[in-house]
Image (cartoon, rainbow, N blue to C red; front, side, top):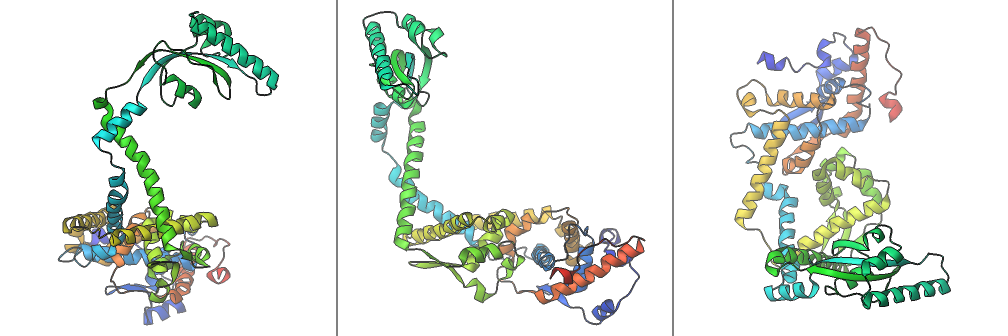
Length: 476
């Protein structure tokens, strides 16, 4: 037990100096945050932060706010990990609403997009024989290039030359010899105009349409393009049997049609919904996105409407849950100085709401098996966060570490820059759902004052002059 606890050494334990502030704290331990009977005090928060490098732990209230948020998340996780029935206190259906809703959207996509785009075997065969999507042709061509700045007279003269060459080829003159003599395409002229085997998408659209319409041995009429005039000859062609490529063709058609149908479906949802955004929605979310306050909005603020639409609304609380779950990347997206980007992100959230509403209006639901599967996935994700955080159930249950000590080890990793908060951020909504958590922002400045004391004492004890830096009062 002592060996494990030796890993948890706070800066304050090496300091013998006393202060009026510390005396006051010993008389009344103020809480910065509380959850499930556990308490993070002002003194303890300052000691944790003092373990980090000053240049990476700014003396700003947001630093304490972030520490309190992480402490709450890992305290809940550690206490759940060692409870008699691990994670039974978490309502995964309610807490992980996004995953459940996403499954509904997939079902809606199947019903409204995939099903209408699905073709019968007969329709598929007809399209395959008509379009010949995987045909390839062995072709030659001659290019008579028309300069970009050519006059109409010059262009007409070059067009007439192309017609004469085409007539000679059609009359039986060797096509390859004509290409070597007249073609302005340096890549193929020396090879007698040979393009080799071509598939769809390789040539200019004008040439492709002609090449795949010709039968072996046929020579095209002159074809005009942005480069000039072309003459095409096909010497051979191959069309794979329908049975060989039918499934690939079906997938390509469904992808193409699904994209078109999906765009039309979403456009119809927005048109019917008549969406109206709160006038200050962009500035509001941009201000809140980087803040730890996002995880503990009061009920009144959570109820604020960001977007109103026919049959529903997007609230600030719903937006906050989505952003917290998305981690730092999502926070950065909504904190962007680019208003268009923030507006687009808000529209995407409204789109999600409209899709969920459409799914429910169509009577789409999850089966009990599907719901249980999603809950199991969420449980495994929580276990993964615990493993990454080195929260070992057996250590805590055996008394080697208390819940508080285990959480402190993780907090030290954070303040020392040895761990990313992304893992716990993604599960924060699930962990906090239904919990009675309290954070006291009015005590953040007190933590920062105590942190400044600890840093000064540490510098004095090491015989170094304190660096010039802003105090909490100067930053406020």
